[in-house]
Image: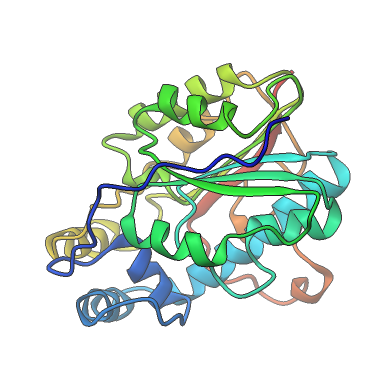
Length: 272
């Protein structure tokens, strides 16, 4: 493989006149990389739904999924699409993977300028043998995403493709399904797909997400769970199947007691 690839500088500019999706999510996670306009939108959303709990659950799901992919499925290459802002030390994809497989290669994809700004400082290699980089790209252009990935990853070997809570921002979830299909068609046999999204079983879903969109933020539209499941068509779904993310291989510490409401659908699958 070639030397680590340097991504182009983004021409996007950080907007402070509307909430940013990654910054609002950072607020839900208890982070500091957000502005007043993001906190106002986040507080309004929290008054209607426990997005902070969802954010925590989704990060724990990512950690469990990435550990499974690296330890049990033997994945050494990761394509994390719509990655969002970096989180707590040790809980980002590259940190988890490279703690298991030091020479793993990870490429992050996002088109939010604040994500790219922080990526330059925080999404860096944890080992001398591995590769970690990031790209400014929109997943609505899967050909471009794959072209960037080919500059970093070896497409003769399996790749773990991740869409973690990001496809609800797609123009339409049928478009999202097409994006997933195109990306998975471009990676080799033995690759894996890891994906989750909020689904429309959320109580008062239209009011909650309609209010968020009215703030000027990029709309997030939770699809029916069945549409999320269709993203896995043609793939071999890994046990326990496509389930609420808190039910996907929960840790021993989280087992027991009544499970909280979890209107999400997600899972992992292998490309034959």
